[in-house]
Image (cartoon, rainbow, N blue to C red; front, side, top):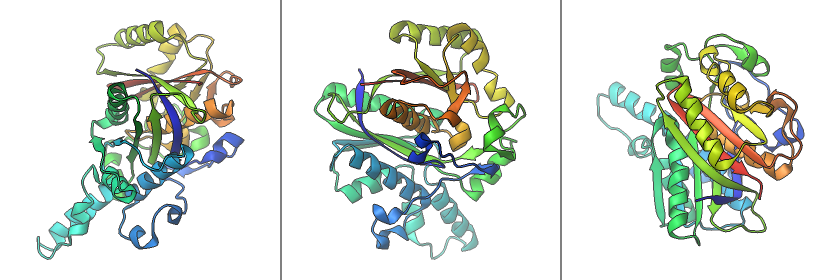
Length: 345
């Protein structure tokens, strides 16, 4: 089952200027989103009660709905690995410092993983199917597969699907103890060849429908996952079978992030299965986080819509002219491998 992407919205370290050659450079070990003016989509009285991750998700979802000229989706499906970390941290901190007394309920209410999808539904007045997948680095992919199943049951539906994750001081401090991050410039990150990467965050949403429309911007052709392969050969075989079913792409987008161990998975498979195919990357543009593939999907959709590949995204060979088929291959810690295939309409 495939779906057509009618609209796409993203809140990330980059914006649509990426496709005109403007890239936001950054140095350090955290790559935060470039926060837009949230008052465009959220009432000013509500903004002060919302955590950053909620504002990011609400904004990205509204952008995608606006692009699709859709007022009300028939379902909201999203993925997140960390949920509302900031509000969780606030609640737990007050729980300790105030000795479990006089706790305000707002931080607790907004600390659950499905807060973002719930807030989107509340603002839209949407009482339809609403589901949040919390499956680590497979959260986005499971949300997409659930959306495809919904469309298979009822092709008339329009599904709002996406993913969101955020950086907080608490989470960044804890994850830094595992030496996951390093200080680096985004421009040289992919060729740093050392341990660690840059932490990222972002939100991306897509309006999916079963029927091709005049405003359809891309096709979500396939979503596939491979968990904890026993060897590099198993990964290669799995991807080879995927290519047998769907054909080779015009452009491969990989999840390289500048960490020497993480990036070592890609080159051998590219040599065997993707020889002669241009290779791009995306994590030097958005940072590393569990649902970063949502940014890659937004970027891939933009490439198919605009017919050009941002020069800053290219990793190997020259950018192809007007690619018609894009494969996103991402992995997290060598365990969660995902394949998302996008095609031009």
